[in-house]
Length: 588
Image 1 (cartoon, helix red, strand yellow):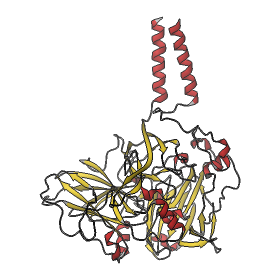
Image 2 (cartoon, rainbow, N blue to C red; image 1 turned 180 degrees about the vertical axis):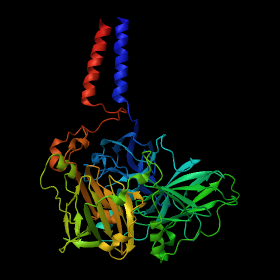
Image 3 (tube, one colour; image 1 turned 120 degrees about the vertical axis):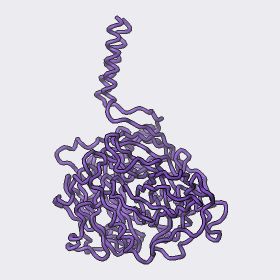
Image 4 (tube, rainbow, N blue to C red; image 1 turned 45 degrees about the vertical axis):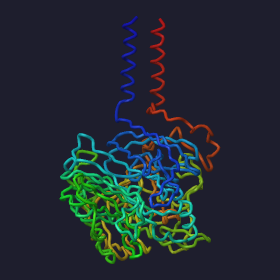
């Protein structure tokens, strides 16, 4: 019966094609562990991924399915979060304590999500226990699909640059200092791609430190994706004698404007086109300097080298000038100048400006006020609207899934209440498909950044002083840029608008690690009351903890990476039936 056998064989192949067809899968196998390195000339334990610091770049394309097997080789629990990746209706994969139990030391866990309807430059990092101060971060590039043209010429190269304020103290020492109310102090240095500064000044930089060299060809244009993955320091980025043509930030194409320098605040990401149009008489300095600090911070300056292939001499002379440190208005005006390119397509072919956010009725308003660290019940804490978030032992998402009462409350106030500050697990109850206005009012003395998982929001306004209802008259209701992290200057406010169309429980937090670690975060619950099944179900490999610890199997998650996409139970049954039929045919 060869013809019948061939029929079943081809049927099986066709079924597999249908079952596994659709958006591509890409697989990563990552081992997270300590490595020893000396970025500032002092040996220290650093968190590496597959032995790399910074970690590998995740280079994917819109709508791809991403499968990442993570082995925790640290001596403490681990979660990786994907800053800016929206995880549509799948907050199970968010990698923060509100949605996931930590991966225990020595365990594997596999993240699986789709970069649905997204493009742009993002990064990932460990979200627990100040671990980001020890590394563990890397880049995420989400490319346009072939059918969506770039709003600029294809660059000759793509270069990722990580900037971070760095301390030689361990992340465990740093978090203990923060718990004890001790200020982090001046960083020991600024790293560029995990390396210390070029010795531009013998008095400030000791000999023997490795530094980053970026090799380029004259006349070519490169896309530089620059991320501030640091702890708490705003950094000014610039390249000697070169312009930075801004083209994208955190998933949105921008109006293309030239800058000589850019303030990049904690958690923010930018894409610049840089043309190598100099005569290469020397190499050129790439500089990252702390902003809004005094002269004692001068030693904490990151310096790398831009090297033309035909360069005739090393970089020389003073570093390119830093903007006036005493004038934060310069930085705010620069931030206001960043606008959405409403005529460009991105993840979809229609122009970004087809989403006319300025014409949508606002359904919820939250004015969120922060405060510097203060003692609450004898411990140093930070607050938003007088509440310092304390993660419950059972993640919010699991408590919701299993209808466990008392784990959290849906009572986060939309204004600062006239009451003493407290520690609580209080959530914002978001309205599904509502349109929320959030105003961040910064009562601290330093620039703070705020990030929202699961969403891009529109930055529509910022100014110094106290926000009032009249401040809305200054909003940009046409081409305010859509992004996931915004800065808020000290003594100032920033307003964002966000369309709550992504069901799940999503983290809204300070990106400054000292503020976040002490409690400046809140979760936004967004429930679709009619079609809950549209949200992704509890993953089969979920880790259980807290009140659900009894459900955990000790060995369930110590598995080897399979490298194959999951198939639904229905498709699996059909596949087994076809295999049995095919086997019976061959036996006959």
